[in-house]
Image (cartoon, rainbow, N blue to C red; front, side, top):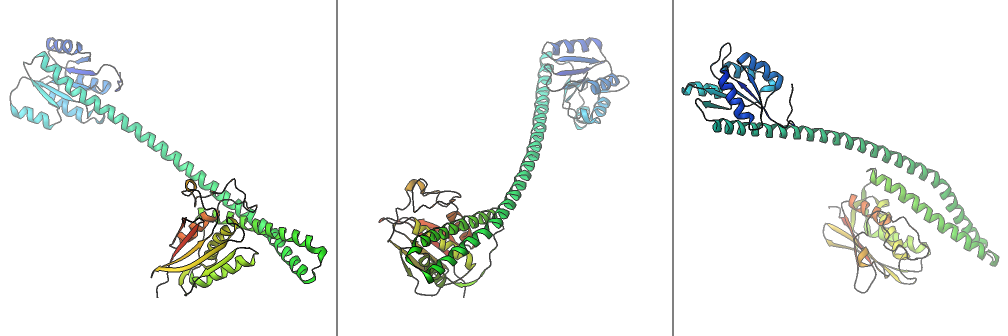
Length: 396
């Protein structure tokens, strides 16, 4: 019979050639809720040890055919029995015998004559340690299996997530590719119509001019949403490459301000950029950040108010662009998530019919951070919002 650690009664194998002593020991241990099995000699003890894999072996030293020491060595040669406590029962007081027994792997020894209480105490101590060790080993094995299963599940989940990300990226890029052509055609047609109306404008064309202007505005909005969707996909797959070059930041800021003015805004744009500031950056991406901040300032601030842009170098190694509007600002409870993906701090409010994805500031922060810079928002006491873009200055 093969017993495992979950059995209620520990198994003790008593190997003793003296039948009377064997019965006495078995009776003493059986009263302690042990399952006691006896063997009459060492050879019989080895066979039963292999069959039972007991929790403890208690063996006499001097026996015919196979001594207790020989049984001990034979037990220790069996891998499945190497951790079973082995107690020797001897009538010899020779220290050499006891030392040899301990060196060969005995857990303890008892010298005859010994009391029933001592036998019970020694057996109880070693069985408790052995069963605790077996239980710990089972727990560790179970934990290892659980961790291995978890690792396989995580690997499979990660693979599925990566596959889904690749599919989504391909989908977004294909959709953007299909949308860009009609958007470009709509935008180009609207601009061509507006130029024709400017050249041959008459009173009856005012309504037509208005409709074409709406078409142009909506085409710009659609193009912006398409570009933001593509940028989001590239950011999440780390595929947003930068074309770095030495550029003059003040000139880039003035060009962005002129672009905003040319869009027909009725805001007063003030630029303070007195000195050239050289940075190493991707000019198109930094211009994208500036235009996003300027367009937000125009959208979220009252008609006719001013937008102020300032270029400064607070430190020799840092260039800053500060863009301030005089709009309603951001409520304190909505500021922490301002740069989060898909977050819209003015959700539920109406600003010139503007509807966005909540990606502009998220993408702007990613672009600035890829340049080794930082972007933050400040809220002056007299109202409005001031965005601060910090970028490293090109070393001389």
